[in-house]
Image 1 (cartoon, rainbow, N blue to C red):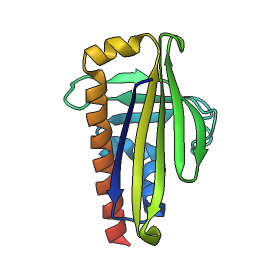
Image 2 (image 1 turned 30 degrees about the vertical axis):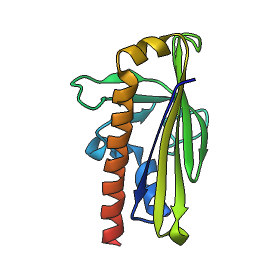
Image 3 (image 1 turned 45 degrees about the vertical axis):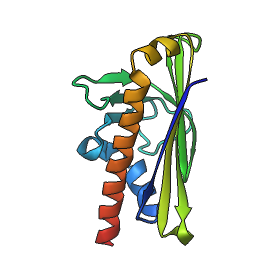
Length: 157
């Protein structure tokens, strides 16, 4: 099963990274990859919860258009989030996207890890067209933007 994994070290404590990462409503202001991120179900609760369905508009690095996906949150903890997006059915295409926030150096710095595992018949076609390379570049761009935002927050404290 093909996968992508990226990570970045952020010069800010995990609690500030969590604060910025889980504030999905601010994504349009700073997130170059997930340009729109909203809950599609359970909209009365602003927190992200297991089972919530999302509507996310993605803009791959270097592309002019966005694609909309409707993933469902599989797990959510204080330091992690994972969702699954499906195109028609699992056998056609799916992706399991996860994020983890890990303390480093006694909690003064943070390791942010973003990964996705893909499956289904379309995986091979998407590989041929370079979609996974563009997706990895977009993950890196997201990570760098989160780092900038969290470090700005750390300097304000």
